[in-house]
Amino acid sequence: MIPQQTGARIVALGHYLPSREVTNDELAQQIDTTDEWIRTRVGISTRRVAEPDESVADMAVAAAAKALARSGLDAAEVDLVTVATCTAMERMPNIASRVARSLDIRGAAVFDTNVACSGFCYALATADHAVQCGSSRAALVIGADKMSDFLDWQDRTTCVLFGDGAGAAVVAAGGTTPEPGIGPVVWGSEPDRGEAIRLETSGPEGPRALFRQDGQTVYRWTTTTLASVARRACERAGVPPEELAGIVTHQANLRIIDRIVDRLGAHQAVVARDVVDSGNTSAASVPIALSKLIEQGALPTGSPVLLLGFGAGLAYAAQVVRCP
Image (tube, rainbow, N blue to C red; front, top):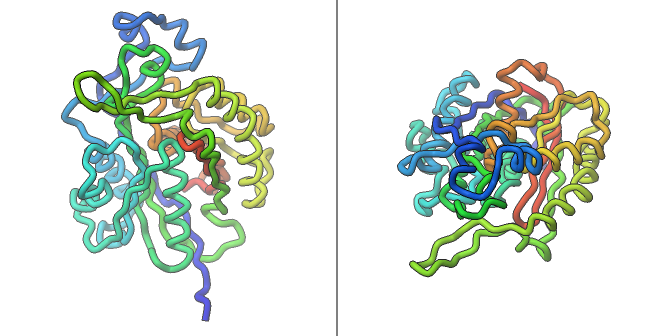
């Protein structure tokens, strides 16, 4: 007998950003760039950079604690913790296990997932599936990355793009309703071009992984491919783009965000542009941006919001969710 599926919903969000703010002018003192050059090409004004002793796990715990407190659930009710990250220095135990230990979550399933900037949307879909099939009742879904550990601070084409941070969502069973709290995911990849974004190991003083990307390849892919992915996610959720209350894409580049939104045609939606203040925080960017919009009261409870992650691999994932 096939068990009845149970819908899942996001019940709360939280985010964490390091206290250290790095402006464009500060970067211009170290490399050949200017505030105008950075703003014009990628739209970033500032970014947050974690301290050397501040880990991915530390940031993940801070964001998850906020989300859990806002959810009204106890730690004992969480039975799944998943963390999307591509920058964890601590391989074992995984970051999810460290979060569970710090928040006194006992007996939960714990796993990390690495799909880089698409990671949070992948992890959210996985938690949604776990709730729908009855394997989980309440899950913590976290995106956390410390990109500053992997940047070449002399490469002006990449070091100006990134920041550090974490965002988290509590996902719980929400009953069977005509409008799912988390819509069907549209996900996939184009691995033949996956090397366009990578951590490359090199260095005369011993192996060190540094972020590298083919910016033109990435820009062409994002601006020509991803609007159709977003449209398919809207179709599967039964929400036309013109009925979206909000759009939260991966915060890669302001020009990319605006191009995707323009091609999608959802001109009335509130669009997350947190990249201006936080930079590109990889797997953390979608939950941070969504959490900020909800804190600001920009999205009404129950309103439909498109989430779209994309990046290394070249992987993508999109789903329409209802705001908590």
